Length: 142
Image 1 (cartoon, helix red, strand yellow):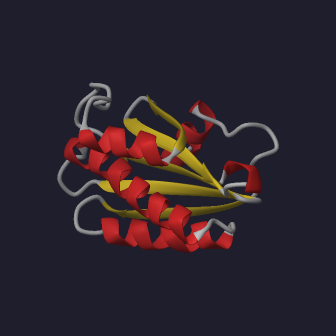
Image 2: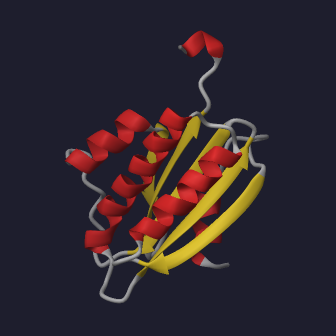
């Protein structure tokens, strides 16, 4: 079982909420802009508004910012995107040098939890992950 499968098993999506899946592996340093670009394209694909797309672009950046300081030199970030009708779920993970929990008192955490829904963090034997989602607003939410 690869690391994304381990993380997916540790933090499965709610039943009935998985549609298409996209995976992206990238060097942890210097390529976060690629994660932002893929995230915004997929957010548009599930029908998020322009404002919501900007929020997910920032959210994935903050999730990466929480993981990158813990990634060993030359390490990689792994992103799994789950697309469902009107919802994008993102799991960002990486092999980490430390077993310490991700800081929930940082600015990045505050921004991420403000912009995203259902933010959760966790670990497998050698990986840390952050999983969050964003749903398209309904007319009653406006």
